[in-house]
Structure formats: structure tokens, C-alpha cells
Image 1 (tube, helix red, strand yellow):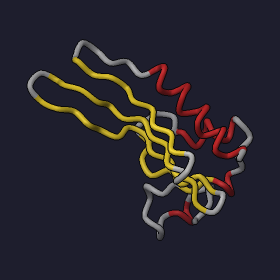
Image 2: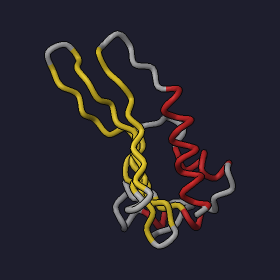
Image 3: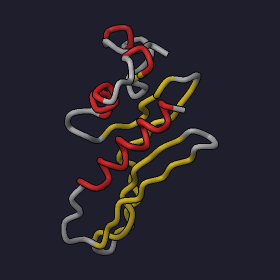
Image 4: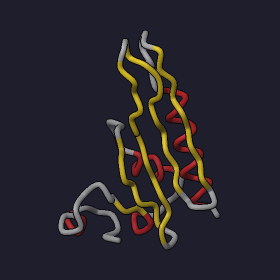
Length: 108
């Protein structure tokens, strides 16, 4: 599926650019092509505290990319668009359903 490949490529590129600082952290790219969930997580330790934080989460539902979490400044949606994914295939799922019609993206 082309949408799946675009999501994996965008998240792979993003995972390579995330600075980790001096803590004992790693960036984990998780791709589940069977259930169509794609994530970038911060894993590890910041001093005595365990870190397990989702940075980006995208899932595919009915041939649309549902962006559940986006911790980037410029947005994963714009990067998907740059790869040819139509706005009608992108749902900003981190917005409540009543706000989605106010965006230029798919409602659901």
C-alpha cells in the first residue's frame, strides 16, 4: 500500500533527526504493517526516571492516515503531503471531531 510506505518513510526520516541530549534515551521506530500502527517513541532513562513517551503515532483506517499524536514543529501532515498524500487522506485525529471540519484535512 502506497500510503503505508509514505508513512514509514516519513517516520524513518524523522527518527534519524531527533536529538537525544545527554540522557540514556533512544528513539524507537515501531512499524506494525499488519494492524497499521506506526510510532516513534522515546525510551530509556532520564536520571532516575523511566521514559516511555510517544512522539508520533499514525494509524491507517479506511485508507486514511489518522495522525493520533504529532510532536513535531512543522507537522507530519505536511511531510506526507510533500510525498504526494492527498489532504483528503489525512485526518488530524488529535483534534476533536467537531474541530476537524475547520482544518483543510479529512474529517474522518
